[in-house]
Image (cartoon, rainbow, N blue to C red; front, top):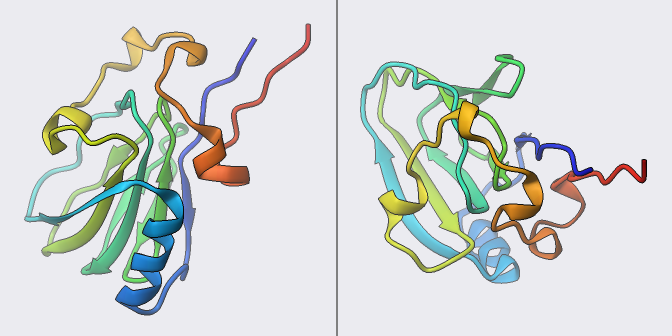
Length: 143
């Protein structure tokens, strides 16, 4: 039985936009820029596709599957595998991200918030561990 994927934040992953662009090319993901304006904390949710995010400007936080708060600041990379429970924190200042999607789909379709109670088995998710590498931990129990 596969276990649920987990959000990861790689602190200080990059220092320049060129480093981000090189990482995006390696991933093969589809990039866009997203500016998050002031907003309240979002509810815990998941997405059905893999997402990589790079914090370019501003700071905020994200909650992981245990509701632990992780600070996000410029230079941080988010790895959000399909099915990873998380919630974006309250935004008090504009935060600029480069957000990348594993598939070429409309941005807000890919980022629709799916209810944790509707979480399917991870093998039904659109998850590509070869792209995310060792950072995406989906573990299979051989029970």
